[in-house]
Length: 307
Length: 264
Image 1 (cartoon, rainbow over the protein chains, first blue to last red):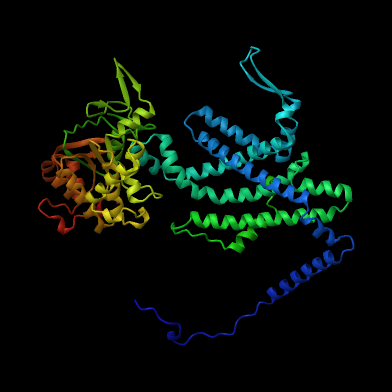
Image 2: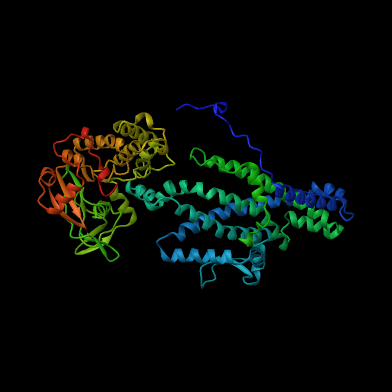
């Protein structure tokens, strides 16, 4: 088979390109709207951009940024662990385990995350003390709930248990995507069902699990802002604290927004490379471009409760 | 033994025994229960009536007096070690290299050291003619090569019985020969083998006995030369005529492929 060079193609078609006036019109309209918005924001007498620049790198904001990252990473890691456990339970032949995990998913996905955060924060109203001990005896150890469930712990619990419910479905889909022949082959060489899961099924399911997990993490970065409802001391809380004293509300919300955008952009880039790594050699090289991935993750309406 | 899926009986009063070192082939139309029979032997399917003994051991249960006790999953896994299984679609682990596929069982079931299991794995890959492919992932191998790795993987557990479930049915015609060659070598080394196949030539040359199965029953069972060469049952005759190309006197060079069989 010879590979023809382009100039060997006889009588190439050189037609007059068709016009697309609609594209021009819509383009101009969009451009006008964008220009108007930029102008409105830039010239607004109610926004002092000096304040934005001034507060962007101050101590409390950076501290909040750090805590936002801590909340996100910790909640996501615990969420993944919980998710794997709940997914394996869901697929267990033990009906009770399966139903229990279905109930967990139903409960933690069904209650809005903001409500869950408030519930964990106020858990002391139901259980004033927490203790371990032998039931019906006085032997044991008890502490005040408020000493254990601090704001931070309440935030982490709410975020990670909620994430665990979403992750369970992601992991379950990953496991179910692996052909049944794989676990049969694993059991045929004498591996126990658990070994088959750990050594054969899960390593393959990872490829299916990674992309939605990345999306969840990026969502998580933004969802942590809800912890501000219990004064979680993360980015949004810090911004709120500052504007409650100096009344530069918009400027400080801008400061927070810029950091959230920076975090999600960074995470999108990271996700792109992680996906590329895991799709290596499978013939399913990451289809999306880096820029496209960033755009997709910043898309409006990626609010957790909305899915 | 008997086996039903729902209300549909797929194995009906099937009885078969294999001597040590014997090669037996099961032939017959698809949906006749051949694969189910094979999968029942190593407990991938659970039979509803009857007993399966491998090497004197009852499969799947412990017999205490007149009662049967189900084996724990662990004990069931252990009993499967004695039985190698080769699947129609190879079922290699795609995330592991050829060598890792072969070494996985010895390493995690027999708890061998990495070095030990890999050395043994290399030897097995050499035995199926794939020593130089040890680092290749399954997707980089042809179907025939994948199936040979799958055979090596089964052999790695040093089974006393090998089950083959249509090992060449998913292969391109020109790749069938290399897999059959490995199986012939195994047969020559006195491995006990139960083979579900459409390769009449293989059955003719390697099997001491052939069973013809249809609609969940063993219709005819006997020496390969008789069942294939001079079948007594009308159904066997019809089946052999339908796989038409079979001629006991032809050599494989003539090209006896299962492309005309109902399964492919």
